[in-house]
View 1: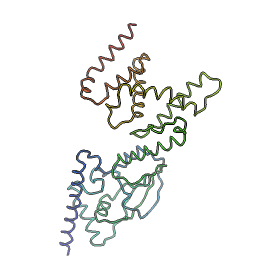
View 2 (view 1 turned 90 degrees about the horizontal axis):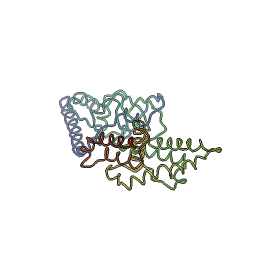
View 3 (view 1 turned 120 degrees about the vertical axis):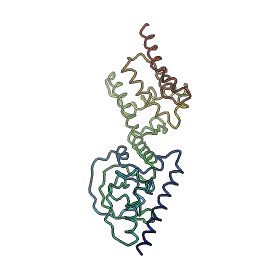
View 4 (view 1 turned 180 degrees about the vertical axis):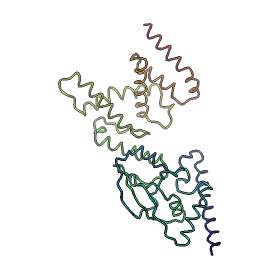
Length: 310
């Protein structure tokens, strides 16, 4: 009987590991898509405020999407990737076969999803056996954002960005004021950057006024006199062609940051056209990018020398 069970556990592990291998082959061009989500990475995105102990619960396995420390050992479906997991994995599988009650796993809850603190093998075996629920001791990491279960960090990030967009448009009324609903980003945290740009613009306008400008007027002023001119020059120079899978708004944030760096190093004597040209040459993805980077320092130096002579 024991020998039969042992043969079964070996077969179960082999099947689970083969599934991990097939999954990795299906994502060979983008291996991150098959990686288990790291709790640390998601915490950087959601920035939880506090920990709250929730106690013992029965949680759905479908909502366990990552791990605190073992995310490199399992794939995004919790199938085992490495042979060194075999002994422990089979030991847990044997317990299931023999109806041995195992202790609850320890998990963090973040954004409505769960990440394993302790018990990764137990979760892996349970998922491989097609079970739907597992006993867990839960510590909740408090966050306003609630996420849907996904199998990759990239998809999680998209959810966070969509949440940030909804908050920004709702709180500022940006879309109704500017009639622009396409302020889109591929990275989180950018709507806060835009909001700070608007507040800074509002501050400088108010310095020359006796009556403070309203927030809607400040938003419209920033949109027409700051944002749209940058976008217009970018379109004229066809900059977006060199930045695949990025948006105009992405480039706006990067270009404004680059312009600020140039001002800090070399002073204010740079036009918007020059800044965007330099930025495109330095960071744009094209055949001559590496070659241009070699000469970028020389180009900037000569430009500065010419300006200083006038």
